[in-house]
Image (cartoon, rainbow, N blue to C red; front, side, top):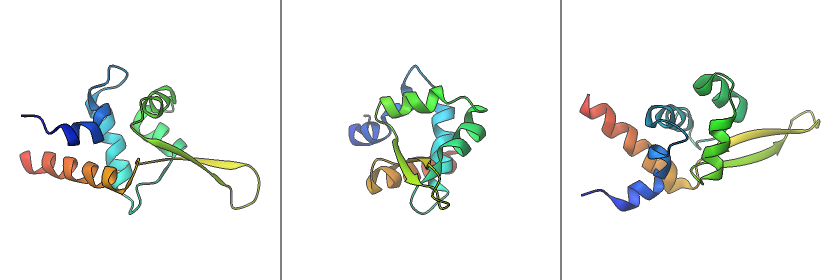
Length: 103
């Protein structure tokens, strides 16, 4: 039986816009920090080779949250991706830990 709560929290893994492997790479980046926040440009470069369209699709589908914060120098804003909530980040960690234990 599929854990529907977990599927809801990690819902984007089966979306036709991206592969589960790419979503896992995004989750690895997000879970590598305590709060799950990753700079948009870093995620685009590391996971998608600079292509922003997949992250935009993930945002549109409600799989990730996008946050804007003022740059420290006061010029413009920086764009970040983050989990939807602390339980969302924890579900990502559990999902990735489960994959590692299966290998």
